[in-house]
Image (cartoon, rainbow, N blue to C red; front, top):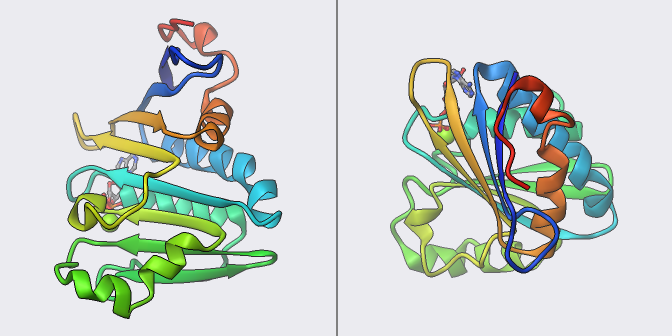
Length: 186
Ligand SMILES: Nc1ncnc2c1ncn2[C@@H]1O[C@H](COP(=O)(O)OP(=O)(O)O)[C@@H](O)[C@H]1O
Ligand SMILES: [Mg+2]
């Protein structure tokens, strides 16, 4: 039950922007699971992928990340990295780093904490509050923008900024959006 608008990229045959509506958290989980399935093989093969999560407090950035991590195989409690800035998750064949820059205010920490090295290394980097580390972060492969029209609904814009991001994006588009009544512009 996800409404979808697909905006074709002027330079590629694959969409670079997709608008979704999550009617409830299960729709968020479905998108996260589809994305995890699309990313898994590449990550296990040593790919690097940076995903930014934009949206206000309570928009669902951590919730989406938790569903994505679960779908990638992370077990046990998934801590939010708010205080530590980064939480690593070891998986067979790759490591996911979950960042939350909400309390980040010392650019020196970027070097001291080894964040430059983490972003240069292979693996998945999920980034909450990327605006707080603007100028330090590399261009991401994907951006999610989450807006909150009401308690359970989320308006989601997914934006791809690399070929890898576009490939991942195509995997999260529900297979027959027209059948669900959503507007589709090819
Ligand atoms: N459709 C939805 N998608 C994601 N989260 C939702 C949705 N509807 C309600 N929620 C709730 O919104 C809250 C989002 O909190 P959180 O993920 O911590 O936000 P953020 O990390 O953006 O500050 C959670 O309590 C989650 O259960
Ligand atoms: Mg959060």
